[in-house]
Length: 111
Image (cartoon, rainbow, N blue to C red; front, side, top):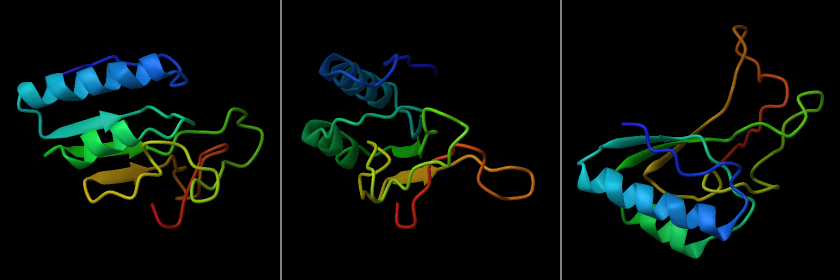
């Protein structure tokens, strides 16, 4: 099931769209959601709806704006929902075939 909910992940309205998409996915009995979204806005409401969901969320650490620089450590420069410390979130990053981080890929030690 494809649930487009955000364009750039920068507004409260887009966070509200994610709430609605999560509720819809739960209503349709989804078990796993692959979320390639990233907000620099902390949202307690988004944290709570993900935390309270029975779904597993595969969340992208995403890439920095420029692939010419190293990615950001999301433990220091938080991006959400990747930086939420929840049991039902699996945060993933991008790697090369040599198992090194791709150019510009964000990363974190503890997330």
